[in-house]
Length: 152
Image (cartoon, rainbow, N blue to C red; front, side, top):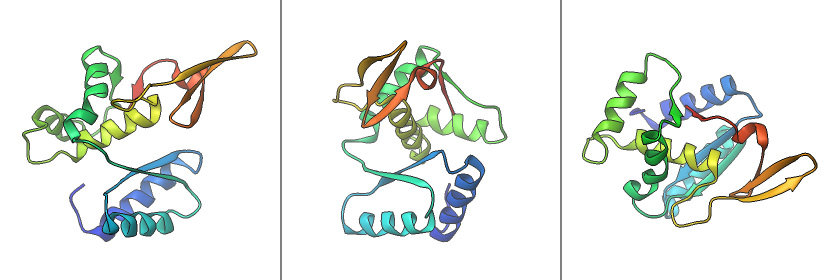
């Protein structure tokens, strides 16, 4: 989304309200003091939601490789919507296109859902009772959350 900071903040809050308080709102924090201030302002605006910040490390192309591999393998599905054409066009033009926020957001979503971060082990699997849990990036994912495919 290319808009004023106020419009972006409002869109984030509207999206969080639609998704519900049980949904993790993950946000990439820019490094440095300005990024810290922006993250704090976003956290205040989304008070009451499960907001998690990560500081981006490395370049966007490297961060996009895990989700790109999953997309090439047919493991990423997109919910139909009016935004599809613009989103896919931005991904097709990455990294040379004018806009890279879509690819960066997709990479961040993949990290959140899979626990896969470039250069780090993906998950540790634990057997629990009759099922299994995966400990991924500090989150415990049950069998049901890992089953199937990444859905955007």
